[in-house]
Each structure stands twice: as structure tokens, then as C-alpha cells.
Figure 1 (cartoon, one colour):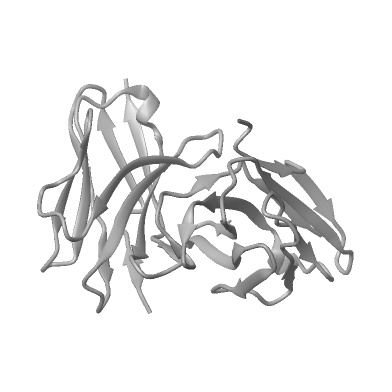
Figure 2: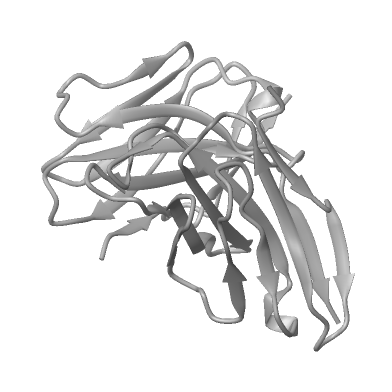
Length: 116
Length: 114
């Protein structure tokens, strides 16, 4: 198993550009999520999904879109990048039942995004 | 909403010694999970240990153990016989049993000195 795969590992954007961070998992996990990590703030939940076709907002969803057309993939889209979105982004997945996470999260290796 | 607080931004310990990292949380829930994750310089997030709130016995994983005080809403991590490879950022995290959102603390940067 590859686990959770995130691409790219690094990205530099100019303000106003758009891009998609890719996340794929091969563990047949129903639950997938996106976090951003900023110094002194821990990890904050952006969006999550409890299954294909179902997404919901987390703590800091503004400026980001997600979709879940398949169980395996959960891309995160930045519609118009802003310097405040400079961060390290993590995708994580887990088994879940009835919309509830019931096992520890498996994390990807993160994407470092810089918006100038 | 749940909050998780790690009041020690940085800590250091000598190799082979014991160190305790603190974590407190605030919740009105009775059933939940608590986790400690480790993030070494490689940036990878690694699960260290997990505790179910309904279990009174403290979880242990080799050199890692927790002191879970449910009434005090405290969940500290003890690392025994510290090794250089333990140098990392450590995050405490909370998950409601009925929930789908993991809430993280701010993190504690641990440095193990030779």
C-alpha cells in the first residue's frame, strides 16, 4: 500500500492564481480530510468528507473548494491564492462508520505552499 | 466546540532521560478519543499513542505512556529513555466518539540533546 499520497510536495504561486492539491489513498478509507499547519496554531481542519459524494466544511474553509467523486481521491482547490494561504497542507484519511471517524488518521507527507 | 491546549511551545531533554509533555482539553462530551502525534523534521505525521476516554487504564506503547486524568481534562505524554530520534514536534489531538473532526493542539517542539 502506498498509503496517502499528496502531490506536489512544494508549490509557489502568485497572488490570484489557482491550483489543485492532489490527495489519493489506497486503503479504501471512507473518511478523508484536509488540514493546514501554521506555526503556533497546530493543524486546522479545512474540509472533510465521510464518503464519495459527501463533503463538509471544517474550521477554516474560506478560499478552498473540495470534491469527492471517488473513494480514493480528495483534491483541494485554491480558487484565487492569497498570501494568507501560505502554509503546509496535509491530507489525512481514516476508516469511518456512519459518518464517524473510528480509527486513527493516516497522513500524507504534506505540501508546502508559498503564495507571493 | 472542543479546544486542545499545549502550554509548552518548546521543551528539551537529555538523551536517556524522561520528559513529560502536557495537554489539556475542554469538552462537554463523555465519550471521546485522545491522541498524540509526532512530526519529525521530515514533516511526516506519525501516531504515537491513543487513549479511549472510557478506559481508566493509561495507554502505553513501549517508551511512550500517557497520564490520562478525565476529571481534570488532562492528557500528558511521558517519554522514557529519550532518544535522539524522538526530536520532533508533538501534537495532542481530540476526537469525539460520535464526531468526524479531529482537533489539534498548538504543538510542543521537543529537542533531545546528546
